[in-house]
Image (cartoon, rainbow, N blue to C red; front, side, top):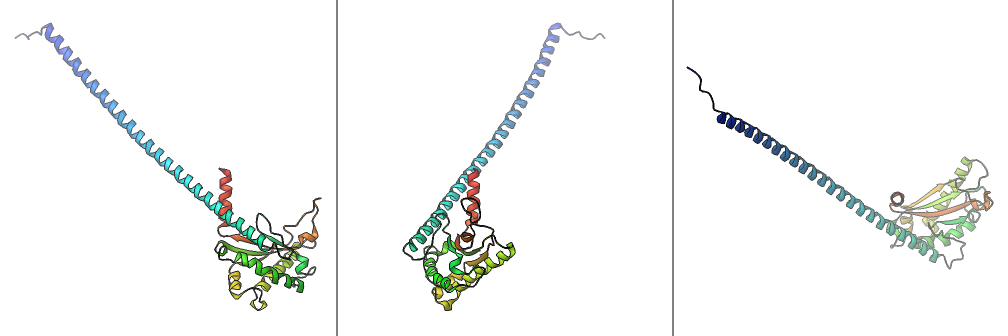
Length: 251
Protein backbone atom coordinates (compact mmCIF):
# COMPACT_ATOMS: atom_id res chain seq x y z
CA UNK A 1 0.00 0.00 0.00
CA UNK A 2 1.49 3.35 -0.95
CA UNK A 3 1.99 6.15 1.69
CA UNK A 4 -0.21 9.20 1.54
CA UNK A 5 1.86 12.13 0.34
CA UNK A 6 1.56 15.46 2.22
CA UNK A 7 0.47 18.42 0.33
CA UNK A 8 2.77 21.47 0.15
CA UNK A 9 0.29 23.52 2.15
CA UNK A 10 0.41 21.07 5.06
CA UNK A 11 4.19 21.01 5.08
CA UNK A 12 4.35 24.80 5.12
CA UNK A 13 1.83 25.01 7.95
CA UNK A 14 3.82 22.47 9.98
CA UNK A 15 7.01 24.44 9.39
CA UNK A 16 5.53 27.71 10.65
CA UNK A 17 3.99 26.02 13.70
CA UNK A 18 7.41 24.64 14.66
CA UNK A 19 9.02 27.99 14.03
CA UNK A 20 6.35 29.74 16.15
CA UNK A 21 6.89 27.26 18.98
CA UNK A 22 10.63 27.87 18.83
CA UNK A 23 10.19 31.64 18.85
CA UNK A 24 7.74 31.42 21.74
CA UNK A 25 10.23 29.32 23.67
CA UNK A 26 13.02 31.79 22.93
CA UNK A 27 10.76 34.69 23.95
CA UNK A 28 9.93 32.91 27.20
CA UNK A 29 13.62 32.31 27.87
CA UNK A 30 14.34 35.97 27.06
CA UNK A 31 11.57 37.09 29.46
CA UNK A 32 12.91 34.78 32.15
CA UNK A 33 16.43 36.16 31.67
CA UNK A 34 15.17 39.74 31.84
CA UNK A 35 13.08 38.93 34.92
CA UNK A 36 16.03 37.24 36.62
CA UNK A 37 18.29 40.17 35.71
CA UNK A 38 15.76 42.68 37.03
CA UNK A 39 15.32 40.71 40.24
CA UNK A 40 19.09 40.48 40.66
CA UNK A 41 19.47 44.20 39.96
CA UNK A 42 16.71 44.99 42.43
CA UNK A 43 18.36 42.80 45.06
CA UNK A 44 21.72 44.47 44.47
CA UNK A 45 20.08 47.90 44.60
CA UNK A 46 18.33 47.10 47.86
CA UNK A 47 21.60 45.71 49.27
CA UNK A 48 23.52 48.83 48.19
CA UNK A 49 20.76 51.06 49.54
CA UNK A 50 20.82 49.23 52.87
CA UNK A 51 24.61 49.58 52.96
CA UNK A 52 24.31 53.27 52.10
CA UNK A 53 21.70 53.80 54.83
CA UNK A 54 24.00 52.02 57.27
CA UNK A 55 26.92 54.24 56.25
CA UNK A 56 24.73 57.32 56.66
CA UNK A 57 23.75 56.12 60.14
CA UNK A 58 27.42 55.53 61.05
CA UNK A 59 28.34 59.00 59.77
CA UNK A 60 25.47 60.49 61.75
CA UNK A 61 26.61 58.67 64.90
CA UNK A 62 30.21 59.83 64.33
CA UNK A 63 29.07 63.41 63.84
CA UNK A 64 27.07 63.20 67.08
CA UNK A 65 30.08 61.68 68.85
CA UNK A 66 32.33 64.48 67.60
CA UNK A 67 29.73 67.00 68.70
CA UNK A 68 29.54 65.43 72.16
CA UNK A 69 33.35 65.33 72.36
CA UNK A 70 33.60 68.97 71.35
CA UNK A 71 31.03 69.91 73.99
CA UNK A 72 33.03 67.92 76.57
CA UNK A 73 36.21 69.67 75.46
CA UNK A 74 34.54 73.04 75.78
CA UNK A 75 33.22 72.11 79.21
CA UNK A 76 36.61 70.95 80.51
CA UNK A 77 38.36 73.95 78.96
CA UNK A 78 35.79 76.20 80.59
CA UNK A 79 36.36 74.61 84.00
CA UNK A 80 40.13 75.03 83.71
CA UNK A 81 39.73 78.65 82.64
CA UNK A 82 37.44 79.28 85.60
CA UNK A 83 39.92 77.64 87.97
CA UNK A 84 42.84 79.66 86.61
CA UNK A 85 40.83 82.87 86.95
CA UNK A 86 39.77 81.93 90.50
CA UNK A 87 43.39 81.21 91.50
CA UNK A 88 44.56 84.47 89.97
CA UNK A 89 41.90 86.41 91.89
CA UNK A 90 42.67 84.53 95.13
CA UNK A 91 46.35 85.53 95.07
CA UNK A 92 45.85 88.98 93.55
CA UNK A 93 46.03 90.79 96.90
CA UNK A 94 48.47 88.36 98.51
CA UNK A 95 51.94 89.37 99.66
CA UNK A 96 53.20 86.06 98.30
CA UNK A 97 55.26 86.21 95.14
CA UNK A 98 53.01 83.76 93.31
CA UNK A 99 52.46 83.61 89.57
CA UNK A 100 49.62 81.53 88.12
CA UNK A 101 50.23 80.11 84.65
CA UNK A 102 47.46 81.50 82.45
CA UNK A 103 47.09 78.27 80.44
CA UNK A 104 47.60 75.46 82.94
CA UNK A 105 47.02 77.05 86.33
CA UNK A 106 50.40 75.75 87.55
CA UNK A 107 52.09 77.75 90.31
CA UNK A 108 55.87 77.88 90.66
CA UNK A 109 57.85 78.59 93.84
CA UNK A 110 61.49 79.55 93.94
CA UNK A 111 63.15 76.63 95.77
CA UNK A 112 65.30 79.06 97.78
CA UNK A 113 62.17 80.23 99.59
CA UNK A 114 61.53 76.69 100.84
CA UNK A 115 64.94 75.01 101.06
CA UNK A 116 68.63 75.68 101.50
CA UNK A 117 70.93 74.62 98.66
CA UNK A 118 71.20 70.81 98.33
CA UNK A 119 68.81 70.36 101.27
CA UNK A 120 65.31 68.90 101.42
CA UNK A 121 64.28 70.04 104.90
CA UNK A 122 61.81 72.93 104.89
CA UNK A 123 63.18 76.20 106.21
CA UNK A 124 61.15 78.19 108.73
CA UNK A 125 60.68 80.76 105.99
CA UNK A 126 59.33 77.99 103.79
CA UNK A 127 56.90 76.85 106.45
CA UNK A 128 55.64 80.40 106.87
CA UNK A 129 55.20 80.63 103.11
CA UNK A 130 53.17 77.41 102.96
CA UNK A 131 51.00 78.46 105.91
CA UNK A 132 49.88 81.46 103.90
CA UNK A 133 49.80 79.78 100.51
CA UNK A 134 48.00 76.50 101.16
CA UNK A 135 44.72 77.85 102.65
CA UNK A 136 44.31 80.16 99.66
CA UNK A 137 45.08 77.38 97.18
CA UNK A 138 42.70 74.93 98.86
CA UNK A 139 40.06 77.62 99.08
CA UNK A 140 39.86 77.41 95.28
CA UNK A 141 40.77 73.81 94.37
CA UNK A 142 38.74 72.21 97.17
CA UNK A 143 35.75 74.49 96.80
CA UNK A 144 32.45 72.66 96.25
CA UNK A 145 32.23 74.29 92.82
CA UNK A 146 35.42 72.59 91.58
CA UNK A 147 36.38 69.67 93.83
CA UNK A 148 34.45 67.05 91.86
CA UNK A 149 36.34 68.03 88.70
CA UNK A 150 39.82 67.83 90.24
CA UNK A 151 41.34 64.35 89.96
CA UNK A 152 44.84 65.17 91.16
CA UNK A 153 46.92 67.93 92.74
CA UNK A 154 50.62 67.36 92.06
CA UNK A 155 53.61 68.78 93.90
CA UNK A 156 56.67 68.58 91.62
CA UNK A 157 60.26 69.10 92.68
CA UNK A 158 62.76 70.37 90.05
CA UNK A 159 66.52 70.88 90.26
CA UNK A 160 69.26 72.53 88.23
CA UNK A 161 71.57 70.50 85.99
CA UNK A 162 74.52 70.35 88.40
CA UNK A 163 75.29 66.86 89.64
CA UNK A 164 74.03 63.49 88.41
CA UNK A 165 70.49 62.83 87.31
CA UNK A 166 69.97 60.22 90.07
CA UNK A 167 71.24 62.56 92.78
CA UNK A 168 68.92 65.32 91.58
CA UNK A 169 66.04 62.86 91.20
CA UNK A 170 66.37 61.89 94.85
CA UNK A 171 66.72 65.52 95.96
CA UNK A 172 63.72 66.69 93.93
CA UNK A 173 61.60 63.79 95.21
CA UNK A 174 62.54 64.49 98.83
CA UNK A 175 61.71 68.18 98.42
CA UNK A 176 58.32 67.44 96.88
CA UNK A 177 57.66 64.94 99.68
CA UNK A 178 58.67 67.46 102.37
CA UNK A 179 56.17 69.99 101.03
CA UNK A 180 53.41 67.36 100.77
CA UNK A 181 54.12 66.03 104.27
CA UNK A 182 54.01 69.49 105.83
CA UNK A 183 50.75 70.34 104.05
CA UNK A 184 49.07 67.08 105.10
CA UNK A 185 50.10 67.12 108.76
CA UNK A 186 46.97 68.09 110.66
CA UNK A 187 48.89 69.17 113.74
CA UNK A 188 50.42 72.01 111.74
CA UNK A 189 46.94 73.57 111.61
CA UNK A 190 47.43 75.01 108.14
CA UNK A 191 44.02 73.93 106.86
CA UNK A 192 40.97 72.32 108.43
CA UNK A 193 40.84 68.58 109.06
CA UNK A 194 38.11 68.34 106.42
CA UNK A 195 40.35 69.95 103.82
CA UNK A 196 43.25 67.73 104.91
CA UNK A 197 41.13 64.65 104.18
CA UNK A 198 40.06 66.06 100.82
CA UNK A 199 43.65 66.95 99.98
CA UNK A 200 44.89 63.47 100.91
CA UNK A 201 42.55 61.95 98.35
CA UNK A 202 44.11 63.86 95.45
CA UNK A 203 47.62 64.98 96.44
CA UNK A 204 50.75 63.35 94.98
CA UNK A 205 54.45 64.28 95.15
CA UNK A 206 56.86 63.72 92.26
CA UNK A 207 60.55 64.38 91.74
CA UNK A 208 61.50 65.48 88.23
CA UNK A 209 65.29 65.86 88.68
CA UNK A 210 66.56 68.21 85.95
CA UNK A 211 64.29 66.77 83.24
CA UNK A 212 62.62 70.15 82.67
CA UNK A 213 65.15 72.96 83.22
CA UNK A 214 64.45 76.65 82.66
CA UNK A 215 66.50 78.32 79.92
CA UNK A 216 67.77 81.86 79.53
CA UNK A 217 67.26 83.87 76.36
CA UNK A 218 70.74 82.90 75.16
CA UNK A 219 69.82 79.20 75.39
CA UNK A 220 71.86 78.39 78.49
CA UNK A 221 70.28 76.79 81.56
CA UNK A 222 69.06 79.23 84.20
CA UNK A 223 70.30 77.34 87.26
CA UNK A 224 68.51 79.49 89.83
CA UNK A 225 65.15 79.42 88.04
CA UNK A 226 65.46 75.67 87.43
CA UNK A 227 65.62 75.05 91.19
CA UNK A 228 61.92 75.23 91.93
CA UNK A 229 58.81 73.54 93.25
CA UNK A 230 55.64 73.54 91.18
CA UNK A 231 52.10 72.75 92.22
CA UNK A 232 49.61 71.92 89.51
CA UNK A 233 46.29 70.19 89.11
CA UNK A 234 44.78 67.67 86.72
CA UNK A 235 41.09 67.52 85.91
CA UNK A 236 38.94 64.41 85.66
CA UNK A 237 39.31 62.57 82.32
CA UNK A 238 41.93 65.10 81.23
CA UNK A 239 44.14 62.50 79.56
CA UNK A 240 41.18 61.23 77.58
CA UNK A 241 40.29 64.81 76.67
CA UNK A 242 43.84 65.40 75.46
CA UNK A 243 43.58 62.34 73.21
CA UNK A 244 40.22 63.58 71.92
CA UNK A 245 41.74 66.93 71.09
CA UNK A 246 44.51 65.23 69.12
CA UNK A 247 41.90 63.23 67.22
CA UNK A 248 39.84 66.33 66.47
CA UNK A 249 42.93 68.15 65.20
CA UNK A 250 43.44 65.35 62.66
CA UNK A 251 39.91 65.68 61.31
